[in-house]
Image 1 (cartoon, rainbow, N blue to C red):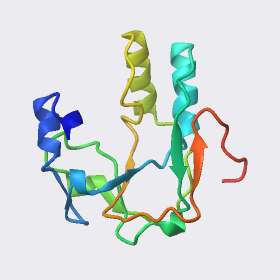
Image 2: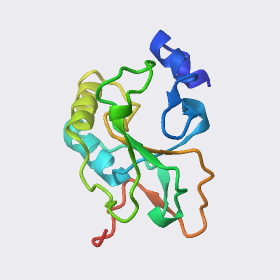
Image 3: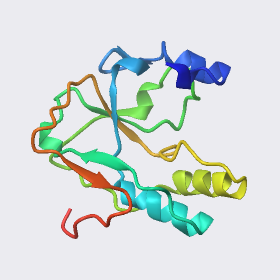
Image 4: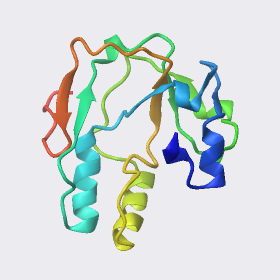
Length: 152
């Protein structure tokens, strides 16, 4: 909860509700539809230096609970109520992991790098949200400095 205490907008996140699954921001599991390697590579491209190794769970989409939604925050601001237009139900059959990051994320990372800052590497990327739990049987640990498999 401490990480939400740095600005008034982020303080309101703790009570922000996620429509369609009716959970608070702090009661959901956040998953990225973008492969971590894409963020790592973008950081390397814009900053000229690699990020330190970090591990992530690569979770097969068929393991996600049926309540999963995709949030692409383009209308509401951080800390404001989420606009229903920013949410869609997650469709595991149509899902494909993105192997490139978004333009918004690239711009964010470039701004961080230019300012000599680090953090919030997944800013500007839609999130897959679920009330969980998310089973890890069949999941594997990956590092963002390792290339993703060719067939995704």
